[in-house]
Image (cartoon, rainbow, N blue to C red; front, side, top):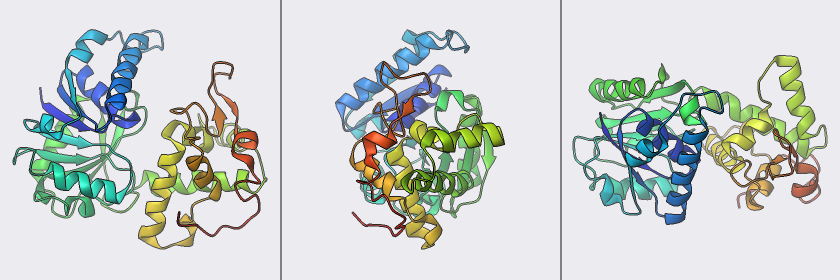
Length: 311
């Protein structure tokens, strides 16, 4: 099995670490925040123990946790054969990380960027190993999603690409090949949909429940776009839309002010307990609408001004 480094212990990083460890790989999980690491391990253990109850396979939680070592220091990655980066979709943060990480990781290791929008060639330029740099867009929740987008950069070698493809196969993932472009396939479409759905709530055209009900009942989607936003993270949605807007300079990607307001207010969705819906102990399984009261349409701007701000 492969020794894999995972950088970032948030929702996606924890999911990647769990998936890898469940499949027998040795995982080095690194995050600057020790509380994030603690929360990630707790969440992984809970997910493993709950797997059978949720209709999944029986998973030995202790064995999974036992394959994961953790630290706040990047030196833990020194012997990793593959390093998967999962930090916030922010160019400056990623640039600082790769420039610090590149000299620490062994020269023959492959970097994998788990990014939702930033082009892989641009990220690879931050390192001295662009031939050993591959993009993989994992879907959330990682252990339960059977497919990923696999994206080579301009300089990615075939050997590095196949090495990552083999790793993904060992994780039970189908790799769907996509060319390098900001947002790839999934988020070029999904982020537009979620952003426009947020505008419908922002402009008082419909409530979050109504928007999602249209998508579930009329189109047969298992989840509506705003439920999906809460699952992914409202802040993550905003950052991805901002990357698309900056890259393409196209007005169709202008971020909805409601997404900005909710992100500033800490209403990030399931991971914070409240987003477009509330997920507290008294909420229903699918949550209840939180946007009308918690985000405050008037506070978010209310009207139909769709010009972006640059906070």
